[in-house]
Amino acid sequence: MGRPFEMRSWTRVGGVLLALLVGYGVVELALRSGWIGRYGENVLMAIGINILLAVSLHVILGLAGQFSIGQAGFLAVGAYTAAVVTTRLDMPFELALVAGVVVSVLMGLLVGLPTLRLRGDYLAIATLGFAEIVRISLLNFDYVGGAAGMQLPHLTTWTHLFVSLVLVFTLVLTFTHSAYGRATLAVREDEIAAEAMGISPTFVKVFAFAFGAGIAGLAGGLYAHTFYVIQPVDFGFLKSFEILVFVVLGGIGSLSGATLAAVLLTILSTYLQQFPEIRMILYSVVLILIMLFRPQGLLGDREFGDLLSVFRPKKGADVR
Figure 1: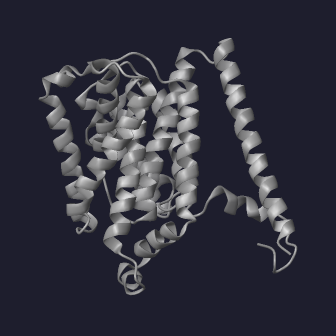
Figure 2: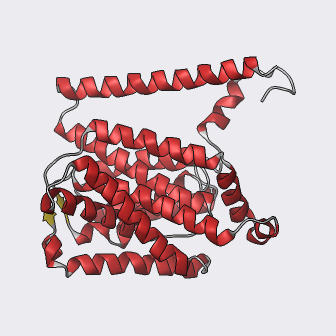
C-alpha cells in the first residue's frame, strides 16, 4: 500500500535535486563565461542574501508569531563576527560563516530569554532596542573600525550562496513539518491552548528566535564579504524595516511569499539604487497599499506547492 507513495516521494526528491544541480550549473557556467558580469553577480548575491534575511524573519514572525524588528542587529553580529575571524584572526571564510552563525544564535538566546515574555508592540520595541544597541556599540568600537567600518576581501562566491540557501531552506522546511514546527505553529495560533496541551511557549519561542537569528547571522557573513566594506550605518532601523517588508508583502506565514517578495523588492531596489529616499518612500507606499487591498500579503499563508495543486488532476478523495 505504501510503495506507490514512497516511489512518488523519491521521484519528487530526485526531481528537486536534479533541478537544483541544473540551476547551480547554469549560473556557475554563466559566471565563468562572463555572461553574468560583475554587476549581475552583485545583484545575484544581494537577492540571495535578502532571501536568507526574509527566511530568518519568517521563522520568527511567520512561524512563531513573534513581532520582531531587530533582524538588522543579528545581521550586524554575523557580519562583524565573520569579518573579525577572516581579517583579524586570519582564519578560513567557511569557518568565519560558522562563527557568525554561532555568535548570532548565542545573541538570539541572550536577547530572546528575557524579552520573549513580552508580546506585540512591546516585543517589537525591545528587539528594535537590541538592534540599536548593537549598531551604537559598533559605532564606538575602534577594534572593528568604528564609524568608518571595516574593509574586507571579496570571498563570498556563488557556491557559498547556493549551499547556504539550500541548507537553510532544507532546515526550515524540515523544521516546519516536524513535531517542533507544528508546536511552533500551535503557539502562534493560540498560546494558551498550546500550553494546555503540554507545549512550552517560552521554549518554542526562544528556539524560533535563536533559529532565525542564526540564519540572519549567516546572511551577515555572506554580506560582509560580498560588498568589500561594512559600516554600522548599514545595519540601522531601515534595514530591519526592509526585512519586515519582505515578510509582510509576501504574506506572514508563507515561506514562498517571503522569498518572492525578497526577490521582487531587491530587483526594484537595484533599479532605485541612486535614489535611496525614493526607495524607502516606495516601500512605505507598497506597505500601505498591501494593508489596504491585500492585508494577507501576496500569497497569504499559502506556498508555491498549494498554488500548483490547482493544475493537478483530481483523482479522488484519497489523493493527498
